[in-house]
Amino acid sequence: MKMGVDGLTRRAYRRDSPPRAALPERCGDTESMKLSRPVSWFLLAFGVWSWFIWITFVKNLWKDGSGLAFDDAGDPTAYFWVHLLLAITSFLLGTAVGVIGFRGVKALRRERA
Image (cartoon, rainbow, N blue to C red; front, top):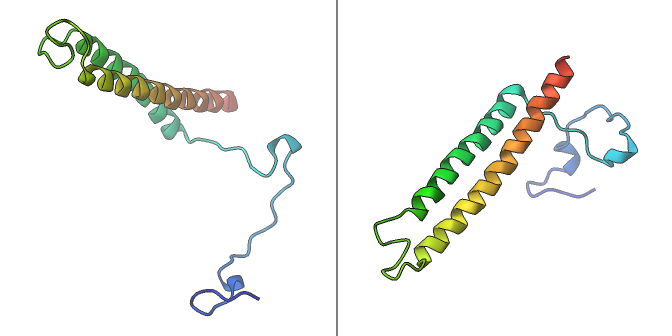
């Protein structure tokens, strides 16, 4: 028997739980995950918000007149490229989060019907 750091056996740390039901073979050793209704709606709203915010940000970056995004010759600066990369990454992550939320909402509606 292995002893833990405090001298207790590992068995003392385990909680007794009933055996898990057999899972379909396609799932392997994982179970299906269900998102709650509020979490699904939050993720979907975050995805929509991300589309609105980051598209607006890129439009404003493109029209920048302060001299940060484009130099005097009209060429993009490092500021422009870094912020464009930030916007694209955030847009893609927001889209992924929104898709997860949409799938959660869709599954909850299908379950309810």
